[in-house]
Length: 408
Image (cartoon, rainbow, N blue to C red; front, side, top):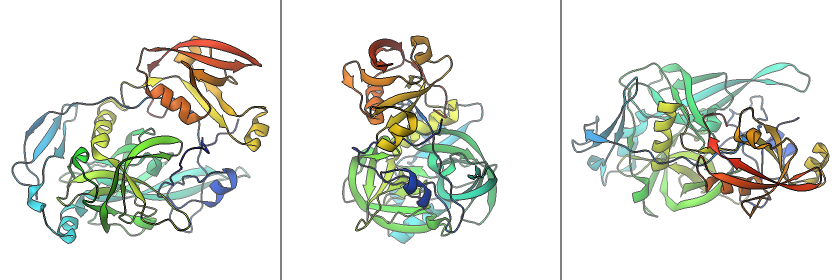
């Protein structure tokens, strides 16, 4: 069975800041999201089944006193207890209040890195070839933990990080979270310059926003500025509904995973997506930093985001005649492609080929409907699914389990 991305034609689709287009446009009917590539490189169509999971639960932070090269003495830093203790810088960066874009850029540029990736793909004729990708990342700890987008490093066989100084390191993948499009990688380095985390809940529309990243995969350290255009903007990125910050700072392919900063040099978001198309300009999006730090802590400490319920199925969203013919079905809808072993779905008796009708009386007509319905529940909840199987409507009760697989 062929894997493919799930796309809902009724939802607003926002393009990730990447440059691959041709193969995706041939296969999908809706605007698609492309893996970031350097111009002129071989391109790869990456797709996959999605497993249902819930949004992360909140994570607490404890504060202590501390400072950072251009911070004042009132800055706080968070000490996280792990087998290898690490420090995340947070707090108010009052030294940079009212300063110019150039001052902020000078202060924070050492905290933004270039990321390049290599992946092995198989051609139509079953020969292997290497594709390259490029993106950005931000340094979260002085000993080498770096945050980027999941789509920047997804399916990569090799990841390389280049600092502003020009030094390059091989990076290892710590964990990823496709639901929030975040990933943590690590390099073996010390005395790095971590970002200072701001407070995205305190942002107001119209305040300054400064983006730093690696546009086109070749222009590392590029600084663009603008304003916060909107808060809590709900958009759909690769079938996932996300609440993002909107900015008019120039965002281009390669900026994904880079930093969005305020006028005090504090990180307020991780650049994740842009809207593109004819006559579209100045629409960039970033994951709010308050959401980022909750996920990052759990990825480092657990390897996944705890507290999310998993149904334990891979699904196919049949929303076109082409897909319906390809999979031999006569009705549009969300179908189970695979039931994962020892999952909640397997224990409840769900089967590959079942079509979702409703979940607790919530009609399921698209992947987003199913995801949103699951988002309203917790681990251990018992939910009732109405499914269509072999032309009959059946009811199945499922006890949701915790999702511990970071790749689902």
